[in-house]
Length: 397
Image (cartoon, rainbow, N blue to C red; front, side):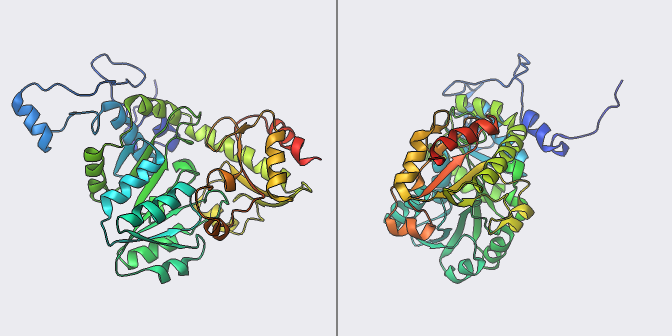
């Protein structure tokens, strides 16, 4: 018989945590995590109800802010990221919204990378601005710009690394040092890497953001988001979610639990496939530039390999001929999905200037380096040769 192990759950390796962390069985002792599809929970007495509502007794109250399936998702992702707490939300954007609404007030200031998702740019630059929260956009890669942008009212640094869509790599530890010097919280969107490839909290970040819709699910099925960090930092974020309700559903949480079971295997495979596709794209005459952190030609390759375990699944490339040529390549594909989503087992292809970043200004697109000839491919789990063949239909004139 094998020897008994004294391991606790959080001493397991990441791939084991991805399968087991957070699992709690009901009285039926089910093998797979249960879905609790209920809006509310029944109390044993009026006194218990009162105790639950004021937080004197732990337990479920109402699925807007307490649900056993969602809690299992939160605890599993927290274990993977090495976080004290996770707050699950309805989408990746609602995770960013909940984070900022919980932590900021009118008169506060954000410093954010200009190389972030288009909807995040709009949230910071347009919507929050209407409520008196100002944002300064700076370089993703120049730590000094973050230092210069700090004001007495700065409360939050926000970045995503690798960035969307140019895969720029931010020095998390370097920016975290600036943030701590000025008493500012640093939030890192870890959507592209997941905790399999990068753990921002270990590099000095205070908050990790996820669009669980992407790789945490991995099959393009449902929407969800998450905010992770210490209990102290997340308390006001949880209180915002409890009140305002941008909540993850129990069904979606159950899907994410199943998705995370294969997260390590998938991220390794996505990274290997993406590296092969990126290397191949560099050899194509119609391709002017390839952006992939795993390539030695990437400007921040050394930093990427220091803070990431692999390059990830996202490759962007610049084609000669601008929008006309980029669209022709997209329209020539037969297998690849033409969609702006990413993190799927299926390879997806999009034109950022007219999709993910279409709603920001031309000036903002130019500042972020998003040209009309730029394409972003989220490399899936198909055979690399089939992905290359499909792209070659448009690349080979």
